[in-house]
Amino acid sequence: MKLRVALVLLLLLQLGGCAVNPATGRTDFVMMSEQQEIELGQRYSQEVLQQYPRYPDEQLQAYVQQVGERVARHSHRSNLAYSFTVIDSPEINAFAVPGGHIYIHRGLMAYLSSEAELAAVLGHEVGHVTARHSVRQQSQSTAWNILGQAVAIGSGVGAAGDLTNALGGAFVRGYGRDMELEADGLGAQYLARSGYDPQAMIEVVKVLRSQEDFARDQAAAKGQEVPPSGYHGLFDTHPDNDTRLRQVVAAAGPLATGRGEVGRDSYLRRLEGLPFGDSADAGVRRGQRFYHVGLDFSLAIPAGWALINRPDALIVHSADQQAFVVMSLEPLRQNQDATQYLQQRAGRQQLVQQDSFQQAGLDVASAVVPGQAAKRVAAIVRGKQAFLFVAAVKGHASLESQDDHFMAVIRSFRPLQSGERQLGEPRRLHLVRYQAGQSLDALARDMADEDQPLLRLRLLNGLYPDAQPQPGDQLKVVR
Image (cartoon, rainbow, N blue to C red; front, side):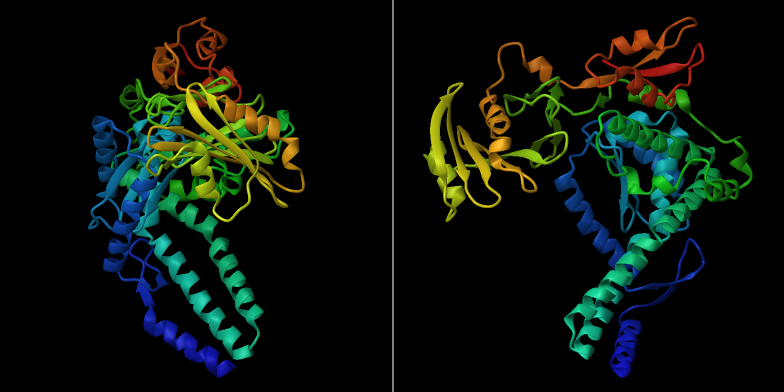
């Protein structure tokens, strides 16, 4: 047994190796060369853009690329061909894939307030690339999986492999927080070297912390579970006043005392007219209805239910996330009606309670797939495509307990009516100059379509929960 493990460890050393990390100077265990990392990143980048649409504003794309390159030029791996891409998504997120491909969501940019903060986000992601975090994680995971398989074979007990994999996974997750802090420290260095104020790294963490505080406060007010953390999912243990965070930022260089470039006004000007929330291409929720101009449809959302708008599906779910309806757009075979399509998709699964009807001039079929986890299914045919609905209830609740809600969503589907196309246009960010004696409540009234408009206004401008702007400040509002 010991001999087998020793041989596997020797194999791992031959497959991989120890390499000096260009950013930290430490020796890391990696199983991938830099060229392999670059090739892997190129494949990943193609997959990313298939899942996430690129924001169609070339001026903004060029601006983000310019800021990112300015930071990356001063990194430990300036030899890489970095690309910086804005994703057309309302999510508050940014991420990097191996080889220097870095992505920032439009939704995160809306909450930043300066070019230095944008540079901090991009610098943080550059730090992940220069320290080869994804390569190190993959190498550790691969090594633990190979070792786990060897232990299982040697012992004859399959569970041993599972145990080793679990230990390997815990080990990888265990240094996630340290990696984030390391990326902050490297990003702060790159900010200082490129002339930005490294304190922007702390300001970005404040923005993200406010987002989590807002989500937690809203969940508590509604008696719901606290939603999972957002950007990188690590800021519950990474607050803006964290001593280690402030230490790594202070160590960034002589410009870490706040004398670097901030670029607030120049950045805010770039946000004028930026879509806030969903885009026209993805569809827009207004109140209890969802409007999609490109696909020419609208549907209703039950009171208290939420909507998740993904590129591949529209998901409507109950407040407790126990009941959900998933709608996707599917191709039709030639001359299929809704009933034929539903039967084709069901395959060998039994369909009961079948019904067909006309709705807003469209052919509709509905049925139930029986079983322990019964599902409501429906198809609405238009042209050569079908809108497929699959609805279900989690846990032990019966389908009947939510079926009225499911059918209400399905029966609410219709083409856009005259005058509704403008409802499918997104809300956008606009800049206003805050005047002495002006009320934030008055500005928030112009954001009536937003949930909790006053709190959202504060979030957008770094004022959450109760800070006040100064006369002359430029504020972001949504109209």
